[in-house]
Length: 133
Image (cartoon, rainbow, N blue to C red):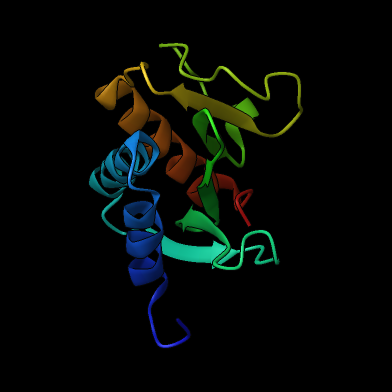
């Protein structure tokens, strides 16, 4: 695994899930890349329970993370509390001062254009303030 790029490891992680969660994260990942073609994929926070780590998307600082749970996937925006969310995508971690998350369950449909707008807003915030670092 050490010779593989983070993007290759993320490809394998999502494929290995073999269910709707991998497909959902793959779709959200594609939307992130469409919204920000300069995005950098990384893996952080490796631990025995998650040896590959957590997928991170960054551009002038962290944009968001993607995590898998038994009944949902979670995309957490590092500075989500500072982003406008006119379409109400954020539905988790709403009480914090910094992060906001989107929990996606199997039957949920994410608004592609609204999601890409959040990604673009996160990148713009990072570039303007350096807060994503």
